[in-house]
Image 1: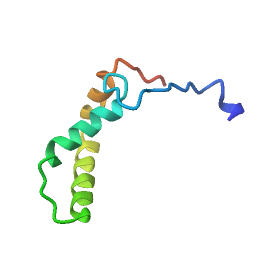
Image 2: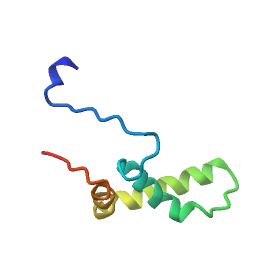
Image 3: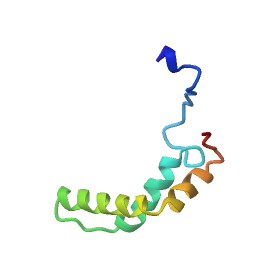
Length: 76
């Protein structure tokens, strides 16, 4: 950890802050399609979430949009 201290910056984010946390944007994208799912069991929910996250993964513009919405930038 000490060896990487000069390269790393740790930002403590609030538990729910969609304007600061790109993860919240991705979660919102996933919930749009599965929010109304009437699942028979936990396995069905798990498969639906994995399927939706895989779809999002194949559309980097969606993930980039979640990051851009925070105003944060990635260096390097």
